[in-house]
Each structure stands twice: as C-alpha cells, then as structure tokens.
Image (cartoon, rainbow over all chains, first blue to last red; front, side):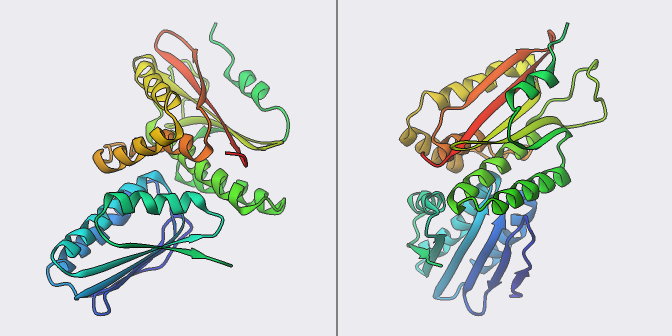
Length: 126
Length: 185
C-alpha cells in the first residue's frame, strides 16, 4: 500500500500513514470548514489497510487545535482502528496534549470512552 | 422601523475592541480573523491556556456563521454577502468577549432557541455527555455542520450561552451570541 503523506497547512494537519511500518500520525491543526473532504481519503485508506493490517499498529495523534467538524471525522478514523483491533490485531493510540491543555486531554478521554481501543494519554512538557 | 443592528453592536462592544467585522463570512475571512486575533493575543503575552480557549471558541463561532447563517432580508443594506455575519472580539478584565450577530429566519428561531435553552439548563457534566452523544450519533449535515458548535462553546467556556433574538421584520430576527472566555472556568 502506498503511504499517505500530507503536509500540514494552517487549517489542516500533517498526516503520515505508513502501512509498511504500521505507524500512523496526525499532527498540527485540524480546523477546516469542510473536514469531510480532508478526512474521507484517510478513512478510505484505512478501509484498505484494515483488510491486511500489521499485527501491531501505532497511532499518534498530536493536535494543537481541532474543530467540532473534525471531531466527527477523527471519530470515523478511530472506528476503523477499532475494527482492526476487534479482528485481534494490536492497536495502540497515543493521544498527545500540551501540559496546560485540559480541553485536549478531555477530548482524548471522550474518544477513549467511545472507542474500544487502548489509549495512552501523553503529556507534552515543554 | 427595523431596529438598528449596527448601533446595537457598537454599544455592545465599545471599549477594547481588538477586532470588528461585518460582512460575508467566507473561508478567507475566517483565516484572516483567526490570524489577527491569535497575533494580538501573542503580542500581549496572553497565557497559552486562555489563548487556546479563545482560538477554539472563535473557530466554532465563525464556522457556525459559515455553515448556518440564513440569507439576509431583501431590504437589508448588504445584499452582496451570501453569508452575512457580524463579529466583535473584545478584551475584558477576565479574558475576552466574542460577540456574533446574524440573521435567522423567523421559522428557525424556535429550534435554535430550544437548542440553546437545552444547553443552558444542563450542568457541566451533562454538557460533556451531550457532546459525546452528538459526536457519536449525529451525522455531519448537508451544510457541513456537526451540530456540536454551541455545545462545544458552552463546554469549553464553562458559561451559559448569553443570547438575544431581536425582531427585524416579520420574516427575520437578528441573533446575537455573547460569549465570555475567561480564565476561571
């Protein structure tokens, strides 16, 4: 599978999905007006990856900001990961948040309570 | 006579206004407003926690306008703006005020007010649960909104949504949302 590599912009995150390594990363700001347009290719890609995943997949989410429209799309991403996990593959989500950003920590906890995949909350200390 | 939108707005935010905008709310305007307000907060060394909250709330208010505003009345001075909205960002002692205004069809007033009232009678914990419920159960609408903006604003600010509907004519009201983002929570 071809990896997905997308450079970040002020409104959309940097994305690196590498099927060969099993490491997926979303990083930066995700505040586009039309989040579906941005996330649909990622969700479709995960649909393919889901067919023959590695035994271990690591997902790093390191967002500075995301809007409510992205929050639904990020949930769609997690739902694909949940399916991979359910098929007896190891999936680990690392949710990064800056030390004073309780809102970002809470957002990670929201997903953790909805999605049945192990989450690790990681505080970024500057 | 239709009531005077502009003067009402000026009275709301007379002092320490760091940004005033009225007109079409498109993607470029949103970018510009976000950059301007972010730069100003950095310039005055606003602590990052408050800065992030203001930025988040500003994104949601602007994108609410972008996704949901109704067309302006036929007799309104600005007929060129497809998505007409007004915005004031004001520095206050405890943080920032973000005030928005837009037209709402009379037919849509009740539904919007119901939504706000539901949020306002909920505790912080209930708002959190409401957010998670909508996140998990509601699809993104044709307009592109997720139905989460106001819930998110109430959750992040920890305050009730302060709002008003001013009747413009029998078909339209002007909707104000007055949001305080402060450090207390």
